[in-house]
Image (cartoon, rainbow, N blue to C red; front, side, top):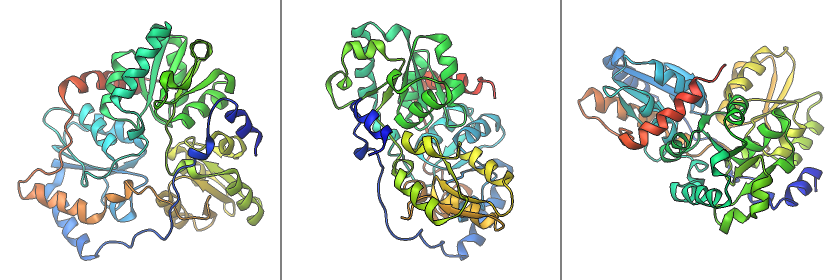
Amino acid sequence: MALTDLLLLGRGVDLSSERGVSCTGELPEASDPSLVERGEKARAALGDRALILGHHYQRDEVIAFADITGDSFKLAQSAAAQSAAEFIFFCGVHFMAESADILTGPHQKVILPDLAAGCSMADMATQSQVDDCWTALESVGIASKTIPVTYMNSSAAIKSFTGKHGGTICTSSNAKKAMEWAFTQGDKILFLPDQHLGRNTAVLSLGLTLDDCVLWNPWKPMGGLTPDELKKAKVILWRGHCSVHGRFSVEAVNDVRSRIPNVKILVHPECQHEVVSIADRVGSTEAIIKIVEASEPGSAWAIGTELNLVSRLAKKHLDKTIVFLDKSVCYCSTMNRIDLPHLVWAMESVVNGHLVNQISVSADVAAYSKLALERMLALPL
């Protein structure tokens, strides 16, 4: 067992349950090529009335139709800046479409081509659970000096909670700046719902220690923590994780290093702390792309992030060796629900005057959510 494993187990973190899901098989085959012509026809008919946003983890056939591609931070910025488009087709997952609806004007309609495109991490923090946590922090007397920092991968309800209690949203691109800002507002941070991003940012970017962080388990009374542990902590991490990034392991890193000479390990900060600690480079989705693009021809990279993106980078940079960090094939199953049939159906429906799969956040939830999102967008780049 790795030293980091032992340290985290000593703090009550059962890493065996945080490694994400396993999956087998290959990526789904591309959709019927005849759909491309239908999609192009529908897109042309919509013209400037429509904007298609595509997250980097989407299938190639969907990315081909995207007007703007990016990670959750870039797409949030894009949604806020595009006031002219009447229809925004968000090719991502539910929480991203919610954020787009919050940041866009009342004349704009946000459409999620498949309503089943959710996020397991976002589902790991419910409004009632977070409310219970805050009540517990109040009972210990630390809520007034605790600032919530909520990862973009969260529901609108949790973003609203964050805005209401003086906090901000963050993405993997700006988590350090968001946490630095939070420490100017209070003494402690409640970071949710991704424990790994919170821990990695606190320890590896802000210089805090593992002892400064505690893990709140929403399924246990008082989060499984004592009042003294809560009072001592600088960062209270929510027990959530990404099912894809959580699966990468030290064993996978050691294996790829044994097989590929001079390989560089490049991972997303949603990976476990023990993996991030031994990686050569760590970065958000956008940063991963830029690092690969700037690397020397002939360099070798094993990348720990979603498979669609890794495959796309490998195809684009044939002068470099680019492999998926894990031997098993694993893509984000909910992201992959947005396929070409769903996108074409959504566009054709709008062309024919039928609004489908609109994502609409209630006004009361949107108000505080927007406040938290605007605090994020106001952070220095």
